[in-house]
Length: 385
Image (cartoon, rainbow, N blue to C red; front, top):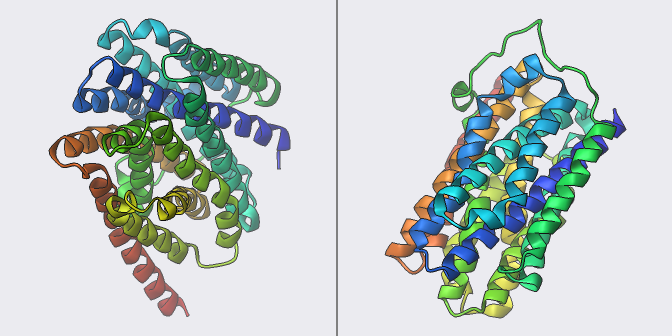
């Protein structure tokens, strides 16, 4: 295993997670303070997802023409510029939209290729733990964003400066750790296209779609939802931190478990727990002693759905198929991140508990597909047994 490359990819994705966790709630809270509607906040929150969707169509061409180091340097330079200019972007919604689109495009390329390269580095017996470590790095720094936001405040420029500085460190790390070579599988063609991945692995697609929906909605709208039900802004931001702390703390145990039990069944169990907590969230808001541990558990199982999807992708695909699968993941991430704030923002405008209602619905859809995948896997096992 190329440990230097692995370390570089882990640090790079940590910075991406930090920027996402810091700027999504920061933008939402600043827009709320400026008098923007919930729907407007949802639209702006969804724009980085549009950039991530575009990135899925660029990855294959980038890999054919550019080296890994150059691709990462270009994508992280785009992210750096979009964060450094964020204060300027609040002058008009159009300026803000352009900067958020650029951030999504740069992050999308970094996430798609990072997941592919880490999966290629993994030996099968440790795939669960290594992919869980990758997810933990992303989420751990994502948690840091709302935590610092609750301390520094949404109007402070310090958080934006700190994220910009971290991107500068990431650029240096890329130069030192990412090899200046091409990774193109010339000898094979992918067995499916971006859209074809849903036909090949529908449960994995729904897992990615659910988590991207969950991730964007919790970061951008959970503070709005909590403040509308009587919680202070600082406490609302802390709720986001607690959710992603659960995600961060439990991915390594889930990855360890995924290397020892049937992975599809564990995937399904995570979805069922997420659906149950989503359904019960309106009641949990009234029972604070139970709310906080349930938020931790919600983060754990929601993150587990995504981590296990990555593990199963690495288990089932390789070569060009693996790159195409991860490009499809990037596209699905963009779709979920785009649809999540838009649909949930509209649902919150229509009903006081629209946010947990949408989370429970998405988790329920994933459970249906994961259950079908488990049944199909059991049938195949019976036939081959």
